[in-house]
Image 1 (spheres, rainbow, N blue to C red):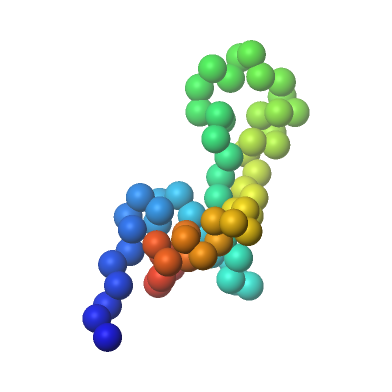
Image 2 (cartoon, rainbow, N blue to C red):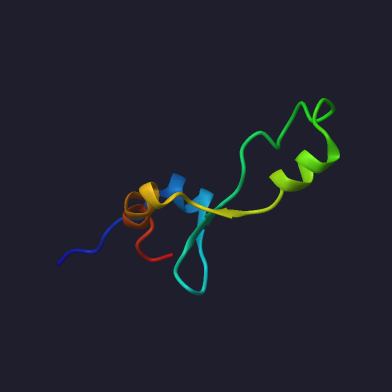
Length: 65
């Protein structure tokens, strides 16, 4: 069986936790921050798990991470 290539774009965006779940950062937290509330910006800074519907597809893109 040949080795699988890691999708480099996905590798920069997703991480696996110790239990095997895949986490991601939030969008809309990079610029135009003056119009967003402090609470909203604080929530956007926290990582979250990816949706169950995307789990298999993302896991295939990052097999060794």
